[in-house]
Length: 224
Image (cartoon, rainbow, N blue to C red; front, top):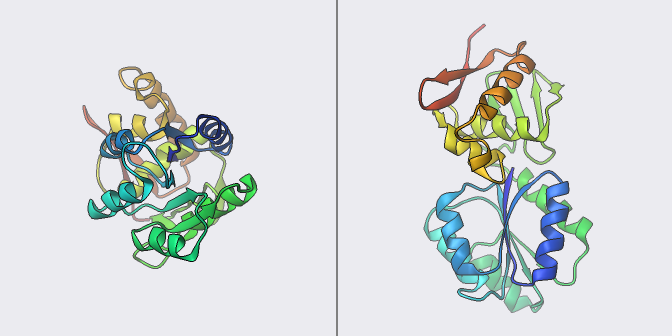
């Protein structure tokens, strides 16, 4: 699961990137708002953490840009500004939650989990394709209620296939979603190896991963 972190404090950014990585996120850690715009145009994110005070453009301006460009994933804003008017402004421009510095790291993780539990437009936080279910708040995929044990990489690959269903997902998109450095996966058989392992683990599911030659992969929900 890819996360955007925009924080100009070098020490805090480094600490958060390491901790969030250990929590299972693939983190793009950016120091300024202008560079974050470039990343937003390149990558797809599950959630973002954005500092209010940033060089280039402010966190509030960055969130406004995201919402105007139909980027709907959850955003948690970090700031030392704790007046009610500041909180109202941050939420009004499109932030989903607000955390005041200094903060407890455990609370940050809990808030991220809560944001990912928020329902999508269909009213449910659970994503489903056939008998496959994905709960993004606990990084869990199950088949007819039975949990499938996946590695973090396998989870990330299957997550993007589920989120993009029924579309074909290109190899570059899979690499961007599941690897910190997409060049490590594109142009080799690394993705194919992980797909083969996923297919074996999904053997009892009615949903299958199909190869679309020269393009990528897609999920197909077969009828039983």
